[in-house]
Image (tube, rainbow, N blue to C red; front, side, top):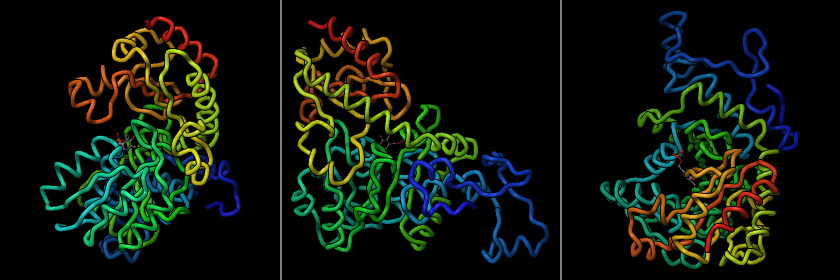
Length: 395
Ligand SMILES: *Cc1c(COP(=O)(O)O)cnc(C)c1O
């Protein structure tokens, strides 16, 4: 394999994880097989005993999956990585591997919805307790930590306010209590933020988003810092069974090659659009970590190399204006998810959070005119023109 240590990040995106394969292909072949032949009874035995290098069964290990995992481990500056069937498979594997009955988790309030539900409704059944705090305010993490806190779990930036958590400060608080800091790095990708450098113990992603980047795969990844943690995760993933498949691994690995240039364009576009929106008379406020008005602006400068592609904003016209914008955008696609090359737009009050009802939305901080934008890599002027014509239809 190429020695990548001295390469720059964008070169690593192109070359990392690639080994030598039969016939000399430039990209890893898709080993679309569930199982691998043993040469003899003795060979099978030595593979199972871990004495021989090789493959047994795809849930355990597969060369196509391994190539993608090696690439991401290198990009994140971690030890090894584990490809999962979805971001949620990665998250549930991490919690299952690290927690036992009686443990406590301190988690960001503005964490990805199903992560919150997993802690609140599933892990609680196994006597694992969680406290949800506003991790933007570091002292709230400190106050929530108890003697049995085993994990501090954060996302930065996080939905719906694109809020920034000081990862370095969160790591120190976790470590003072012998707890681990787990960071969901989905919104930034290793091109913009490398949580291991800030003290994280485990990093995970929904690869469905920026890592794959093309809105055609659902997948997740866990990156560990050392071999002991890796072996624990591997055992747990093998038992829970939420592994990625070879074809999706191949697609993600292909997506990684352009990660660096995609993230650069996401950031450039989002900055221009955030500035445009902030000046717009029909918009009450804009949250983008690259704007000086963002409360986490200074923390962001310290910990990420670019401000990402996610923007949220509030329409003066509330619910009705939100519906009008949704029904009039042409280039921006009305869809949940994020991190793809195409710009996606979403109005939580009339879409993902409609069934909650206005009262529940209010207490969850989902305002009626809140719009979330995942800025794609189109020409920024085209995205702005589309938003302009849709906003002009609102009263
Ligand atoms: C989408 C997402 C997840 C879940 O990932 P899936 O691939 O949909 O399971 C987790 N965390 C964040 C921040 C996400 O955006």
